[in-house]
Image (cartoon, rainbow, N blue to C red; front, top):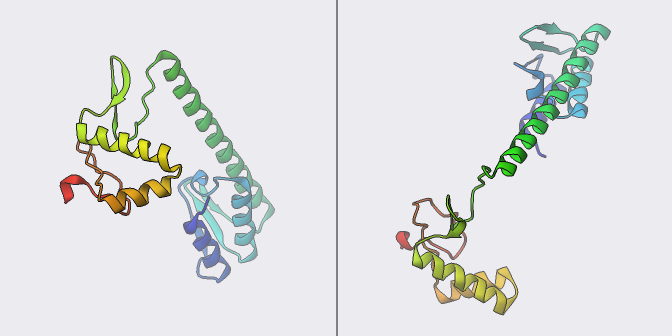
Length: 175
């Protein structure tokens, strides 16, 4: 995962533009152990401090490095625990039949009978056309090209949500 803010911080540390790293919680910086320990090593090399709500630490000193290393490890562990709890909560909801996930455009979730087509007939027809063209052409790219060539517009769903714009597909309400 790219983390441009973290990379910018590392660059600024290396060039001497940063003399201290302020953080409310180590978990905001230490999404993984190697990044955290790399940051501590750099801070130690350029004589930068790490400051959080509990104090000011010098990663160049063994005691500061030990405390910050433990804080990073604890934060990483906490993130794992939170991830596991969220997964287990979603699983429990699914087992009770209460888990709701967002459905793709063109479909709606009905409390009584589950997943169904959006009641908007224009939307249904366009979705059926897309699937028919896919069966015929065998490629999503070819479907897109044929729909553009035919001037087919993807209508707005009846719930008023905006469609994600794709080249060639415009909302029927926008034309």
